[in-house]
Length: 59
Image 1 (cartoon, rainbow, N blue to C red):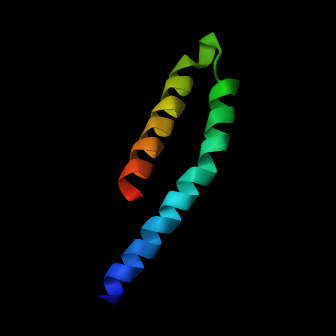
Image 2 (cartoon, helix red, strand yellow; image 1 turned 45 degrees about the horizontal axis):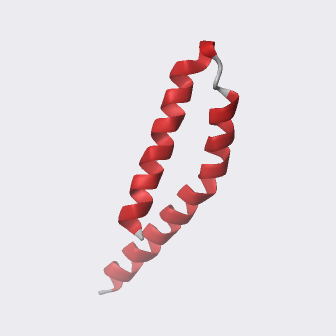
Image 3 (spheres, rainbow, N blue to C red; image 1 turned 180 degrees about the horizontal axis):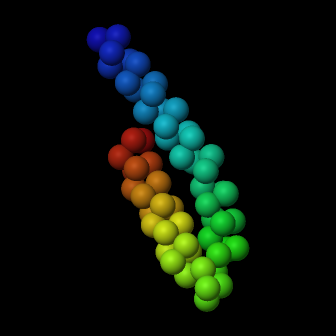
């Protein structure tokens, strides 16, 4: 049982860390929305989608 509690605590920290990264990733997306950085822009948007998907599974 203690392993389960630890795992839930760790998942909560991961979730909180991901939420903390979102504003920075959004800012990065806005900064990279130029024609020469379109690959970076799409990568950052993919990360944001992944964080959103993970948040739905953790909570």
